[in-house]
Image (cartoon, rainbow, N blue to C red; front, side, top):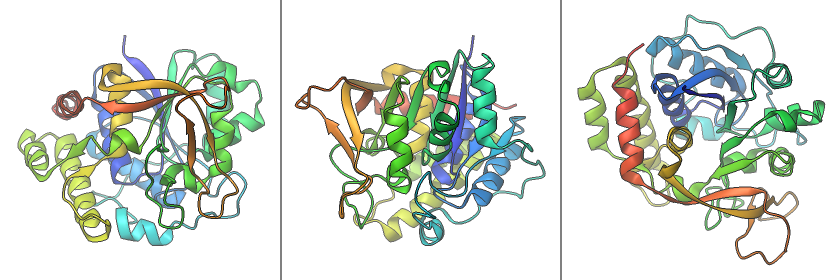
Length: 315
């Protein structure tokens, strides 16, 4: 049976590839997508998510979520980054589909508390605001989520100028991330340590176009857009880009794509230059119970194989 999952996204170019793979791969059943403020404001993330599903003819419900972090008022305001890195809108046709009327947080609570989600993995690949709010509003929820596979964090590096050891998703809502990390739900964290090793190149984009399916052609557009902006804005310009969120979906399809270590992890919420940093107790110095399966290696060839296999499919 296909593995059921829900993607919580802030779409975004790399989210778009993750949504495409999740909707197309026969080993998965994408139950729904929920959207959140992050790469772009939630209204753009919602529209972009609908655009992806329309482009590949995927009938997946989309639920709009929260438009600001769990605690902080509009921290950060993502406007500059959205324009610089992802663009406000994906460069594919405007969506004709509409989001569901129910709020994403209410949907998540209702879905998992009803028992429908007992075999459904929750995959947040943006800030963890929706998930933290759902956990806070319904304290029993954690016992009903079988697992989360999350894109976020990092042990050795970050990607935020003002907090250089922080990763963007965690930095956007550090208090929300802290709630999720300490929820008691089984968590696999797919951080920058591995997403930066799972690279796509212009050659792969050419191959997407040669495959010629709607999903493959759209994915070439997403990936080339990120290549253009990363080359312009990255401290180390390159056209070899990590489509971070897609690795999370591939790891759900095949766990051998990543190698993990069970560690204790926390999130810095007060540091002047470290806010949003994921603090990983790699050697067990704190003697605290491990709460995160932290990915530290990736099988690049398996990752590429799963991407290609998924993009060959049509709906």
